[in-house]
Image 1 (cartoon, helix red, strand yellow):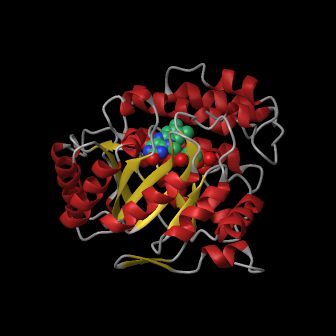
Image 2: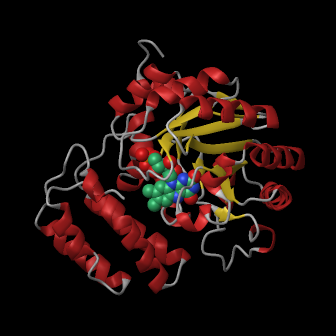
Length: 341
Ligand SMILES: Cc1cc2nc3c(=O)[nH]c(=O)nc-3n(C[C@H](O)[C@H](O)[C@H](O)COP(=O)(O)O)c2cc1C
């Protein structure tokens, strides 16, 4: 990147297997946050290359009904830039799920080798697979043999702070047929309490010839510049900050300048989109998951959050939003990370 401005670097095209993206800034997969409604809101601002779904169970995907499923759900018009993430522990079932994902028309499939929450790891899925490199290779091989769409792998450093293990896994994934990697340089089960070790992204990037998306604590455009300069990663994968500010991609890559009214406008818009896709109780539940990230934007965000989530219906949430914004809350230039999970 050298002296190139961030937006120019991020809007350089990138080839991933047999497809080209025109923007290297992507939404990280996030269960409970990266749902169809948030993705629609992000799409309305634009400025991203790809969006990723939250993790879907590979066992469920082959027979899941998108009309009734709460997570395996998409809008037809987003498929060209949408990657579906799956978790599982069996090569055959991961391959079958990937075939369904290809048939539905997704841009690609993403394999979860990074989730360190106990319910997932106990089943031998997510980051637990990093303890079993041979099985990990077999999963990636089975999937890349089964589909012709790009196969992404998302993984983390591993279970001990040994960067070489991440480098070895990256090479394994590439050898097994992965077409791109998203790397989150944290040790399991650390769930974002300590800063990610970006230097390990550099080692992973140097170890493979497929594109690497760097992930972890990208909050400000300066962080984006720093990660690219420090690691030479080909793209950026942004998670929580894109929940807090769904216009972030447009801001970083398209010169979009948000006004202060964007916070209320975007939150209200999300309430309506949620209701277009879900019944009221589930829409409320998803809005409450979004709320800590949203409230992290404000001074006294804890108090605002308390007020916002005292609601049982979407109508009550909208009333709360209106009354919160009547007092013109002070916007922070960097979000209050204490509110980020
Ligand atoms: C609520 C939540 C859910 C997440 N779910 C997933 C998931 O389903 N799959 C996955 O690979 N990573 C998941 N992650 C991890 C993110 O993709 C990402 O690696 C992490 O948030 C660090 O990036 P950030 O600092 O930009 O948020 C999740 C993170 C959060 C906060």
